[in-house]
Image (cartoon, rainbow, N blue to C red):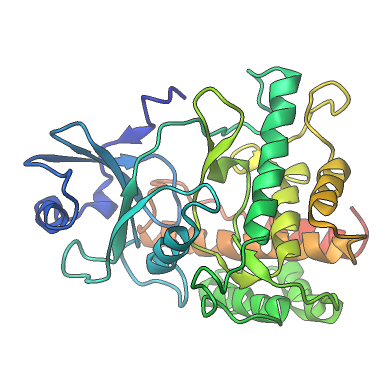
Length: 348
């Protein structure tokens, strides 16, 4: 993707809103917004629809909003995304936050606006157009930036009440079980088995940090020419949680077989410059001073279980016509659940 040519399109019908109302509201809060505002929609984004705002002065901003329609409980909390990025500015690479609107009368749902950044987002995790040394640096900074996040003193930056410390995995298993049941459309035995077995495998380690919740290569932006991250994006699932949940979810990339989500299938780890999963985890442990990680299969199975529940929710929104993925009605929950169960049982 060209850094000056973001992947946008016309706003899809399901996500159209009162652009004049937005313009009026924004002009009163962001000085750079002039007399004209063009709204385009970023491609992708199955959860919170994202839009590019361009002013007549050439300034560009990004708007993230809740999707329309009936939403699952505790999902799509754009106010939390805004709050955590505002608190982390200067400590972790994040865009500058400009304004938060929690009044649904303005455009129909809550939303926030942040600065637009020019950079590179890598959709293909194999980085086919880069050299081995570039690939190595890309993955090393992905690792280092996650460590930087986990080392933030969340109480010192005003996020002490952003989530409950301790008991993270217990709460998360319960949450994603509820989300799955609320969106359930068919019987998936592997999900039932995970719901039953995951609670008994929760590790004793009660480490606490800010947890991004969706940390992966596609959710960070790199500098246009340098192999360093300039923005960590998509904070919808962030909370005060467990750092090992983040590193395990990040490492699902090495287990994923979906190019759409991200996959390293076919990579030669000896020559590509991309580390193996074990090397990536070891570097994280080295940077954080952590020893051996207890029950890695549980952490990986838990991460995939979350993805399976999220996939079920996306599927339900597609069926209801509330997703930007028009015409796509494929439920990815079952294969993810089956893979998670296989890992938990030591079969993968």
